[in-house]
Length: 343
Image 1 (tube, rainbow, N blue to C red):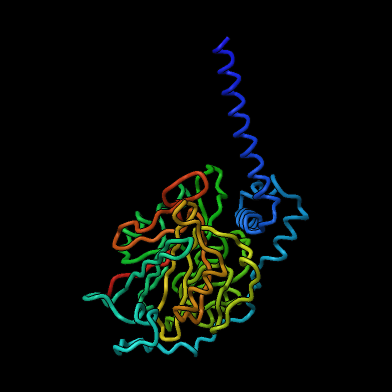
Image 2 (image 1 turned 180 degrees about the vertical axis):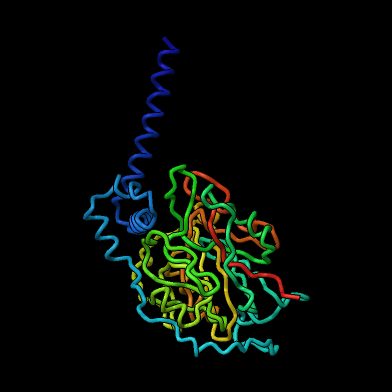
């Protein structure tokens, strides 16, 4: 009889706890605090395959209402290349701590500098690159067999610093082959043309004069205007010093993200932010704009994020890449990389 009472008691406790959890979830989803709803809807709807996380809880109308209040408007302007002057000498005096972080080189290293970011809600790395002429696209071997993790093909290409490049899709019959979304340009030639990225933005690349250009031009026109290496993605965050107009959380939620920027003095910034963990939930588009403005980026754009967000320095994986349901870097097709100095 006592055993039966204990079982009933334990069952009641379990049911009570489950009821509390259910009530808590409903309160978060439908209560007076809009942060959770905005976070869940914008984060889920900006992924390629996890819309169900929002649609399981909310109606299409509620999702549309959230997206209408949280957005980032696409910037229609193209980069004005004449604004970049390549004057980034360290003169020893700085107008802010952020300028000192950028301009003051590490002892014995004029190639790059890594600024570790520990912000409210996210952790990441801002890599400062002083010579943009050494930034090129590098490629994984045999993408038809699934591409490679960035740490592997960065090592094979002797990259000094590398971040992920194009978005990805899987068109091959073997289910494992991977291809870059959008247009890819290498050495002034169209390298590949894939499916649309599904993101606003356009071509992102470096000209023969080493200017980071964000443009809505066609690949043919961009090449005619001097584009040497480029991929297609977005959204553009800052163009010619003007930030994108945003509302709410910027419309894309919080996620691991990669971005690239250039200052007026020619210095290039690689940003990789970790996410999907208790210590770093990720970063929103609006937060990336604020961060880049803080470090005086003149042109800046989002790149592929999520499990693709990867930073490799001197052959070592620096960040902790995480996708939904797995850890470790996604297998990629290409990368923006700082290459060694030519002898």
